Length: 319
Ligand code: GDP
Image (cartoon, rainbow, N blue to C red; front, top):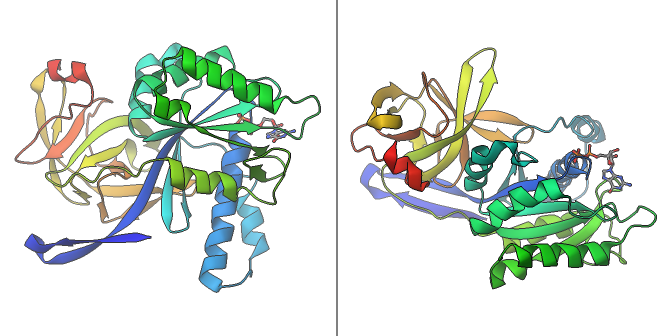
């Protein structure tokens, strides 16, 4: 599924990737790493099938890819031609501001809950933020293979919790996917186990809105940072308007209306568990920018000439 966008003024045709940005909210040990590992495996499996028309897999590669997940902050998979960016969220409330910034990169959230333990108090804070910010939730009730699990009760508890958090009607109309990340299956009915986790991936494509495409001068709010021993600090954020290009001159808009003219050295997008270098990043995608000096989380990367600060956060206009 691709959208072809013609950029007539520059006489080039860009192939735009369809995208879903989803943040994952889970209490520690509820199975986030196992699930993300499965998503990568499943997406790769489907992609290979699509490419080859039949199931010819390099099992070694797949196995190599599996079981190595040390959950990165951002992971990306391509499923049925759609790129799904999976964004990790801090599991608790110690990082208030960070939670909001990270959730801002997503259009929906995946609330992962243990079918026995149910939703834990620590996850409530992050869920509350997501609900307030209008994100569309999908609930995953994991570990239904466990003895004494209580998926139906947990589902009702999650509904009650969302209701008490003033979720909108649309948010309360969330889809629930049940399964066992460990056994590698997800299903809309936990009494009917499936063979894979396509039910979850399909639900993400159906339920989570695609990012808005805002043409114009580029804008990206720096939402998190990564560090590489080779290139130093890397700014990570979602392109909310226009397009970023490698080698582009930009304005880095900082607090107190300080503007620094800088240059993007390299651009990367998330690719599986790693990142890959690209020439340009389209609006809606999450990208990693190399080469910015002295940036802080909350700064905006904007057009060199017509800079305009991201107004994603009300208090940012004061900065
Ligand atoms: P995380 O802390 O949320 O990333 O959780 P992990 O993915 O590391 O899983 C924590 C533990 O739960 C590990 O021992 C997993 O093997 C186990 N686990 C994950 N998913 C399932 C599941 O669906 N069923 C069962 N029985 N165990 C699971």
